[in-house]
Image (cartoon, rainbow, N blue to C red; front, side, top):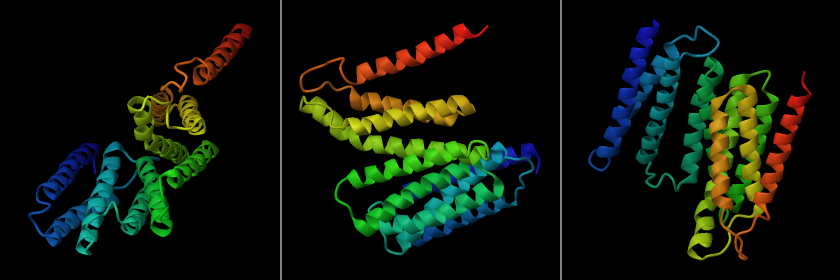
Length: 289
């Protein structure tokens, strides 16, 4: 398939995927569950076959091929959710067991494109799906009370993914970037669980932030790590996630303490960090001939 034909195919697949999601939403309570499953599954099967038939001629898929992989994932997702509806599951977000088996099937599809086709975006989809599956499995099996258990799991997943990403930098760039991006997303999700309670306690009640300094330290550290990785590996994705995590850190850390606003604490820590880094850079530059 020529490059122009591939781009035209990807444009058609984008339109088809949008159509399937639109019809699913508009006729959700009008058409029967079986009807939704049939046309959604047909569209998913068509796109998956087309994605599988296109050959990857270079080391990495072309942009239009990546679009096919993403569309295949999205159509497979809505197909599996419709299949769960046919099985009698109505509250899918509240059914952890359903999220586990749906996620595992999607993980298999994304991994196929990631490993078999060398698709970086599919690798990222596989990583994100794995995070969702782990969280859903814990909720399904252990039914923990409150968000603390999930926060610790997200922290451990973030640490593991970042470690894997930094360790695989020289051997597999696509996998390394996907791991770091997945770790950044895990930490971002962790931080978002604090937003409501933190802003509520600081603004509505007039108290300090509801986020512990340890959690804020983790978000800050992961944000810096993502930006450092982005700069060294010239990858934009980790940079965006690093900036997002640092923005989230500011949102969580800006509320003053119970004694009022003070430069003691995070402002002082950040001042020392910035001064040390800038001083080291200027000193190294002045010593070069």
